[in-house]
Amino acid sequence: MITFDGVTKRYPDGTVAVDNLRLEVPTGEITVLVGPSGCGKTTSLRMINRMIDATEGRILLDGVDVKTIDPPTLRRGIGYVIQQAGLFPHRKIVDNVATVPYLLGWDRRKARGRAMELLERVGLDPGMAGRYPFQLSGGQQQRVGVARALAADPPVLLMDEPFSAVDPVVRASLQEELLRLQAELNKTIVFVTHDIDEAVKLGDRVAVLRVGGHLAQLADPPTLLARPADDFVAEFLGRDRGIRRLSFVSDEGLRLRADLTVPVSTDVSALRGTAEPWLAVVDADDRPLGWVAVGDLPESGTLAGIRLAPYGSFVSGRDSLRGALDATLLSPSGGAIAVDDSGRVRGVATREALDEALDRVAGGARA
Ligand SMILES: Nc1ncnc2c1ncn2[C@@H]1O[C@H](COP(=O)(O)OP(=O)(O)O)[C@@H](O)[C@H]1O
Ligand SMILES: [Mg+2]
Image 1: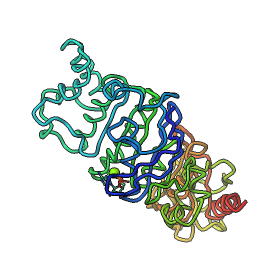
Image 2: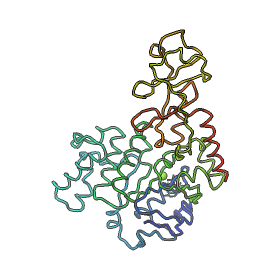
Image 3: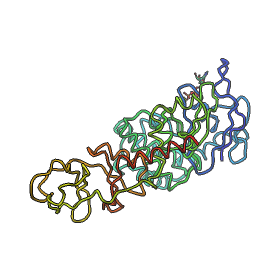
């Protein structure tokens, strides 16, 4: 656990970058520091590994004041990842990753073996090992940066906007990769970002900072989105906070209708007089094929010959309410098709059922 115990940083020019910060970073979790530019995120992070020393207060690492640990020893147990990866340009990828093991005096073979293992872990082709940083894309360089930080297997990882300089698609895959790695490694991670979406996606807990280095709120993402502590936090979370919050709400209790699906082998004559405007068509295996508009049915034949409208589906019991809502966007009927883990249709969540569920969530937020 990392404890900020009333930590203040005043730079020589009088700037107070961090003001009496009290914060606990639990072991084995990802704690995200998020806030606008200049709110003291980097300063807070660098005080942990003593690249910057606090002016007042203490930072404790498992109860020990970091000021009593000499910096090289301290940093051996703390991996550090920064925005532009910070790789050594004239060293091969494998040697970049093995930097700390070399410093620790491991023999070359063992250090390189460890580096190769880590490259694979962070999702890089071992063929990259012999290249130089400039020969890699930005996203690949960031993966190398993460591998390098993990090389000596430090219990603590500090990450300062590590994914901010890559495009959104690469960024999303780096985020996924980090979550996957963390599920295996259980590091104590302090992750800094100015991007609230990234914070909410990655953080077990999120600390929102405001300029002047004040902690505005510390909460897990669902709580943060449901109950921002003040106007500053609400503003920072943005207008679509309500929608994003649905990612954390299970679809349990969402009413599904089983009577709105129809097999593709059905003869259209059987559907005449159906009151429902749209039906979900399924194949012989109960997998969804699309929507049919009952009003546009031909005189005869089965559904097999009819062009179907596109559909969206979500995995019932696994996806969030957000997943269900997103699935409606693709459907002209306004409903979302619920499937089970094997892709078989369980029923249809109608617009009305979703509205009911969303009302319940809104009610919960007011409570
Ligand atoms: N070496 C420094 N000297 C003076 N002021 C600094 C120094 N480094 C950062 N600051 C100031 O401290 C505040 C916090 O900076 P920083 O921790 O880098 O914020 P963030 O990472 O959240 O953008 C800012 O006002 C910044 O200008
Ligand atoms: Mg910064």
